[in-house]
Image (cartoon, rainbow over all chains, first blue to last red; front, side, top):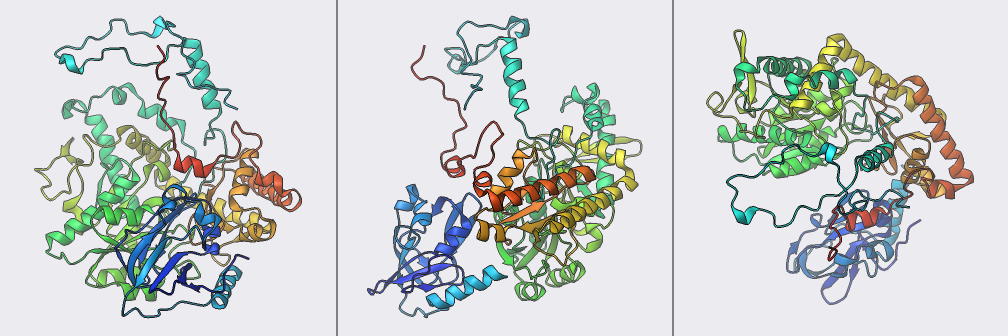
Length: 132
Length: 490
């Protein structure tokens, strides 16, 4: 069973959101997602300043198996990206909730809370996907 | 490990091979001095025997359809009959210059014309162009024709191509290359296109739908007539990706299913050699509406003579995709293959490809493997998922794939389609016999037993090949294919 920290919010498309309490959030992909994708070879990051929209593509993670879109879980503006991923995409595998973060987003003023889940709901979703 | 050095590394200054040197070295005439080399090129200086040994050894390391079972799903790695090579290499074909007068190449043009007619008949389309040089270029040509059709009608708001999520990655890539955006349509639990989602997605922005049928999930799209109706009613056109035509060759025709345009992979369905990246051939076929836009050149018959149709004959053509007539050697092999089979033979291709796939699926099921779509009959290929092995034994699809190599069999396609976790997409093709299929099932059962008892053996496979487990991450990130010589060496 993959790791699902309780303090984070999760999107159906396997991204996590960490509330940084300064109007911004940090976003990455979950441990479960990186396990499914396998060893990362490349991460295409969004540009700082770019607008992102909940449910829309914001980055691409490419593993030895496949290239997959990462969907922004929130509306807002990218204020920072994890530059270390350019040289060390394996951080997404090694530490998906820490050094493997992808982007930091300033939430739009009118941002809706969206359809994010708590850890328990996300864990249940992952379990039901695996049992299918 | 590297007991076979590069041919460059075997070079010794001054070693010559006069028996193979040109008799009178060509001298450049009218070549500006600044374009001439100052030093000779860094070609390896080796003997004839070194060359023979080097390349013979390399060829022995090949894993190929000529030496091994090669059930690579969605690739149709069928045996390439030698007659096709022999006839395509007749001196009249080999020696023909592409700019030689048409009057002296009527035989070649007759073959190409007949190939166009055969492909038209077997796909149920109204016109065929052999020009695209590969499947990807065929896709490009197909979508470019759809775009030309809409644009010619002033219907320029259509900017979206629908692509099922089971599609080959080339489909959305092609749509984007042609200036469209790709919109994904989900697949239902039975492997069919989700019709409700399709209905909700079509509209005045829909340029077309790209569909592979049978799909990459190894099942036939059962509601294809309904799908065609939905897309056509919305004003879109239907594109048929010919990757899996082998399953239905001579049985069902894409034209009869409602498709407006199709590309064929001759290197798959028509058994021309493919491997090492080509060359391929990706002819396109079209229905009535797209006829004016076919890429050039096309061969026409006028009375008893043949000629190339040019821009003046087809002013609305999307244009040329290569300098000359396409990959002639590939087209000729496909022509011979089609003539060898005939109509009856083509039906047997589909029947035996499907029989072999269903037989192998049943054998693997008996051995305890889990088909991804157990209720569905397989087409020419099928999917098993090794997610249980990955979860319970820590041995994943890639480990099984590598271990199969030790059993002398090429691995099936792994981790594609993306919809099925830890999957194998297995396509035995019609040219394999029962003994080979049984041997594959036995190898899979043996690996399963190993995974349960000695998982490390599977996880560190292969053990018997010239190279062991490769570092996929490094290969993707630090790809190094160029010999750059010994800098600073005299």
